[in-house]
Length: 473
Image (tube, rainbow, N blue to C red; front, side, top):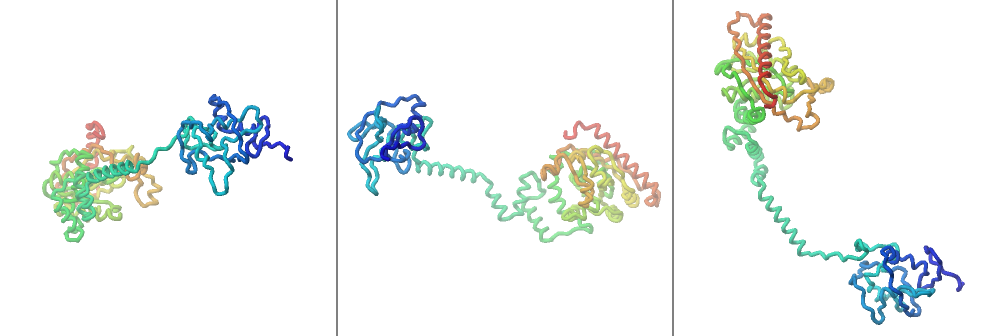
């Protein structure tokens, strides 16, 4: 058995004899350093024979440089000296069957470490074991020492970043943020003023007014109209939309009486009932008179909407309420098309729908007040209606479910109206006090007056459309 050949596993090429202290000649060719030198065309220096000490042992696996607390050394090869062979000493002598180990040292005693293990030459690529790579090596295979962390520089950089953050916080509106926390009502009203809302009174008066409303310390008329709230809060909120967004142009305002009652009859369009609020705003700003709207049943069955509608002067569109308002010297506005005009598709824009049975005419004739046709151009373009989804609308219990180019695809952003250019034309008044007694109960008289009002509004709409250059300019 002592004469048997020992061939290390994984070797290839010509087999050679090995011993317990050195691998075979074929196995020595598997070292990564030899392969890397061959690929780079580096010719190893000639080997120098080294006397083998008795009872030596070849280390099975040499740790890679920089690991296990080994301190990397200079990349220059150390000078030769007694007892310190160079990296070329590891090459076998020509013609020898047994290759000496790279470093020779006496056999370690248990619990003692090899002092030569820490002095591994960093320039020797064979220092790493087979199949392992040095994570600190660069592209050329040479180890790079990572730079040490400068704690002082790190703290200085952190301090400069914190200083910049504090400067940014100083420029923030801290007082306004604090105002929101201390007094949310004052903060909201102040924010509205920053966004362009022009309060008629000072901010202090508006805050005190809003608090009085929250306490219930205010008065309303028999229809629930709160003129102080409408004048001080509702209309100022609408003015930026009317003046800056829609840029409303008013014509024929001299046809509205400065005193006494009158019935304003207007076309209705735009998917959302913004035209009534715009009409109220422009009439009050020009004449200081409130317009009392006649609204549909759906407004007063919708949560929160019915309270706002009542406080801003809207009442139910019925014969009794219309006659009571006209008898009390009020400007009353009605939209006879109703939801048929409000929810008509964009392809039918500015084409008036049926005006119903003419109940508004009966109320005006009975009260003997003038009827003023109102034509509004620009409301059709704020929400171009593509479809009303009637099946879904019936399931939800609403007249139509609006589908526009922006809604519901963009969510809440789709509710922003397009900035179309509006023109509101007030036509010449149609007198009713010259009609014979009992004309309000005559269906033919009511039908003729209704048709006259409708034709006047339709022809005026066509004339305004011919005059305007663009829907947005």
